[in-house]
Length: 426
Image (tube, rainbow, N blue to C red):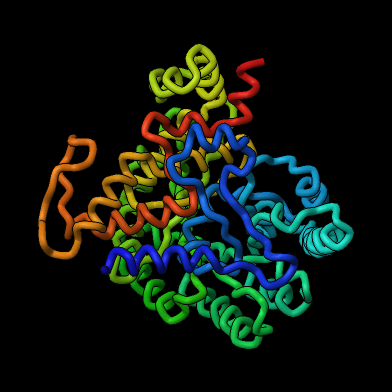
């Protein structure tokens, strides 16, 4: 059957493991106890790594934590497992580094990768505690320099992030990326690129369509190496002197919302699909004026009075705005989020877990997509599943279900906020 072949392909993608360093593997929510896993999950997340199928890695980036390359204790933080649940990170050589610190930042980055290698070799760092690591460069020349000066450290790098991406500089980035992959050792992982769309040619209406289509044509030539298309809404906003408040989402700023819609229109089409990652949420504390955006019921259902306390903590830290924005990202076909604070890791990751209702709908659609039926009432008896129109959605749900897991019928995303849950009980 077609559905059986599809599920087999998904399973094979997750069976690809590293041949070096004992088979490095990551898994979402590995900080939960066995009892918690049984209580929360209908289907557990599966392991993956940077040798996995590109589609798996692209969807698995999730909450990508940005860190400046000048930070000299990144490897030590990994040893200490300082950021529980961390799965992907971006070491930034661009906006987070001052112009006068560039040389120091590059040397610190090399030192970080060397430390990771050394800590693994002496047993201080477990290979499966290494997140997907990306490096954001600031220029084509810097990218080429790093590619040539890194040695074995490259095996810890999943990809590079290309800021202010346009057709001219983008082609230079991608030529170098292609050259590296064509000439790398056969047992080395593929090195991926992630362009950030954030320039005036994209946000300005009169140039947008032509620019997006030109970038799409360029990316298509190198599609096997393009992991994500990322949206840089902070740079977009700066061109208009705008900044969203912590009580609004990026979708409440009309000029940014319209641009995001066009980006999804070009890069989210299923006949030429890229995983699109959402813009950064920059708040972790502020003063409140408007009504909170988190309903009390989901927290109460999971944790009772402790859930109410957790909800208020999120509201006080403006994580409720972040959660709402991730929900809006998902509704618009965007998976993944740039984050700049460790407290955002778990809320973002928890929002990408597949609910039991979503999973049952997806399974129902795929299993009945052979043409015998056109529409049928859902498992939850609250909607109609149309097998042809909903098939692509169902397949994307199944990809997410393998990476982030499927919740039990009586659970919601709040059950996965382990650290906050534990502190609420104290």
